[in-house]
Length: 127
Image: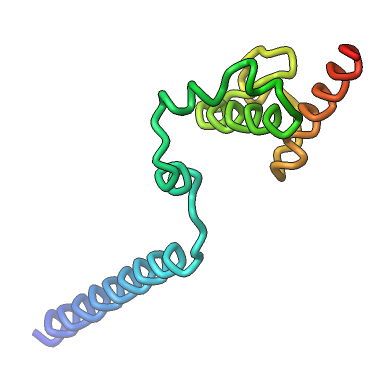
C-alpha cells in the first residue's frame, strides 16, 4: 500500500511538473513573438490595401523602366514573391529553384545589387 501511495504521489508531481514546463514554454514563445514588434511582409502588404489588380498596374514595363528606383522596386516585388515559392529570378528573367542560384540574400540591398548593375548596364547601352 505504501508503494502505490508513493507512486501515485510521484506520478502526480511528475505530471504537475510536465504541465508547468509546458505552460512556461508556451508563455515564453508567445511573449517572444509579441515582444519582437517585428512586422512580417504579409503585415506590410495588408496595411497597403493594394489588391492584385493594383500590383499589376504598378508592375508594367513602362513604369519599371522609367527610373532605377522603380526598376529596383519592381525587381524587389518579383523577387519577394518568387522567394515565397522557393524560387529565384535570374537577371535574364528566368525563374529557377532557389538552391540553384548563388546570390546573397542577407539584405535587400545585397539582393538587389545585380539588378542595379543590370539597370546601369542597360541604361549605358541605350545612351
